[in-house]
Amino acid sequence: MTDASTDQSQLAQRFIRCVSAGDPAALTALLTAEPEAGALLDQPLFSFDAPAIVVVRDNPKMVDLLLAHGADINARSQWWAGGFGVLDHASAEVA
Image (cartoon, rainbow, N blue to C red; front, side, top):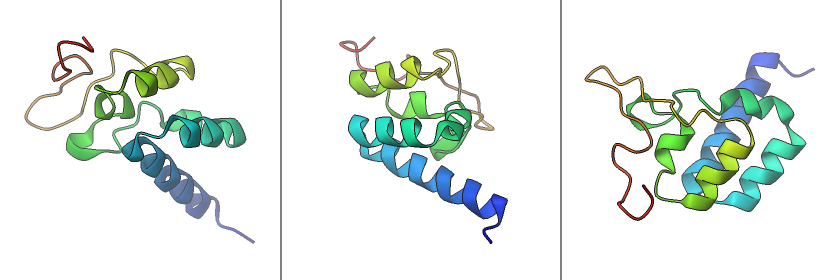
């Protein structure tokens, strides 16, 4: 029998890999196959305790995909020195 916390941890790691790779197809497949992955969209899982939308800020396809699955466009990092959001460091073209 599989431990639920182990399953959640593995799901989070898969989510992190898809987002970090900037792979819309893989992320779509994950979010479709594992609806509970949607709970990870705004979690501070990345560097500087940033949510996924901040990490992919210069990848419009990934931003659109995250938004389509319910990510918060206003989500900000939880970094101790001050939070930042998707537009704080986005390129002028993307912004």
